[in-house]
Length: 330
Image 1 (tube, rainbow, N blue to C red):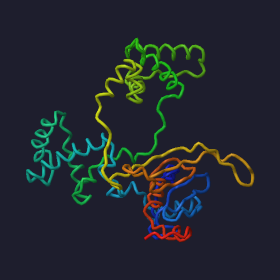
Image 2 (image 1 turned 180 degrees about the vertical axis):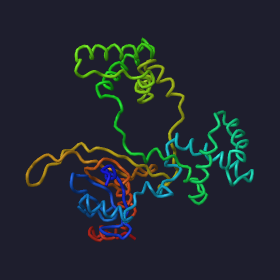
Image 3 (image 1 turned 45 degrees about the vertical axis):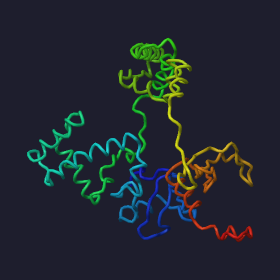
Image 4 (image 1 turned 30 degrees about the vertical axis):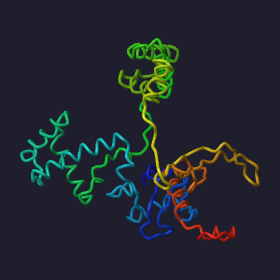
């Protein structure tokens, strides 16, 4: 059984409903995995061996493996994922318009070249387009079949040494100053510091990163922070002054927003008085009225599971709670 399958925050479904229908992985230990039922919050502890046996028999399904990507909607995708999905669909749509259902190099070449020319990009390989079309058909001719699958690849550890990352981040500070150092200058500074480190620590040498690796690290971060550091606060303020106002709503429940916040409180154990940590709250807030519709508090990091639990808190009937307070909910 691959240990990477069981990661905190992953949502799994049990086909037979035992111990529950749908659960979130709360924590992962060496011998056992702790699950929490999304519907009622009940906690289950199962051994890795037991989970592995159920998974091998087909009794467990990960939401990310379903053909329709669970309940993931187009609007939930990032801007880059939406552009990629639309790009694929343009090829599929043109092939359907031209009556091409069996995609071969000969039958689809001209259509692919035509769409690529309109998009101003290099034409994808015909076999890639055939794969997109197959996924589109398997998804029931729904656009979900064209969603990029990058978000389901799991977490990846950095391929470069943590010390190299630290050096790049240090040198990046000089790039975002009013002196406007060039990227080449930053790269040279990184290489110089790595060379100095290797001379001082011959037993633990660092490998020099490529130009593009340094560039990607330097350019990552908030646009406002980078713009202010490189061009000054006045330039940033002038840009923001031209920006359009934010989202506007005209009635309640027109737009609900989610917010993940680490609470500014430290929780102690009731019996041992040991520090448990700072809990996170996931809240659903009505944009128009500012009313809190539902929330979920736990020590788990913000995830799909915490959003589900917060939504259930907002959606499920509150009759028992209203009766306890002796209020008339009608």
